[in-house]
Image (cartoon, rainbow, N blue to C red; front, side):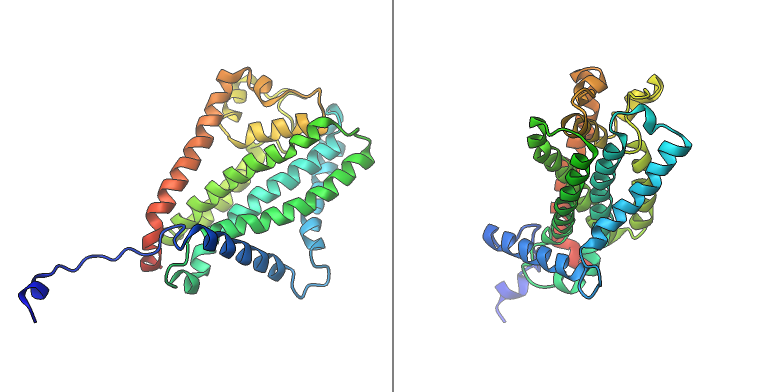
Length: 284
């Protein structure tokens, strides 16, 4: 054995990156895994996809009864039943995607250990599967909206903007949670609590101004990056007379904290997942 070989230092060989293997292969794998998961979710069930619609509808029915017949908050809000339904469906997408993403990488350990499998495909496929469900559920939501008597508006064409922003935030949170769970198994329990807290901290059950949220909580509400998304969705889809996200926040300046938190989550998620990806197989 030569002296050069004897003196050579062993170097760590990095694992596959978050998107390793080429762009075309990445998107092909993402589509394949997402479609497969979507089909497997309801495979063998009697009602199939209808279960995806029953869950938010059941929650909607209970909440509608509570907030219109007991607390009577909804009686003061224009088109409250369909507003509540839209909000529940949107938040269900965020909750189900992020909650499923927490354990997604660990549950796919056998796949993660394969050479050059792009790690980012796993949490993204969870989000994309949830997005399939959301798209189908929104068809039912708009049927309810029209049946309730809400007139179609040109601003309905802006719904993809709401979905894009919500999906971006959902993807960032999913990436961060899935990477953290590899090292810290408490993440699943913590997120179960946090996502429930966010449900009540986000204007899902109530609008911010009808009746108005107390001033001492108003600025706090806009620290939540979900708040402007739901406020703007109400303005564009349900009631054009409702405040926009900017007016509800009190101007662009007061909306900046929400935008900053949104950008921070996305930035941290991207950096952390990219750094963690090559070491995921070692830490499983």
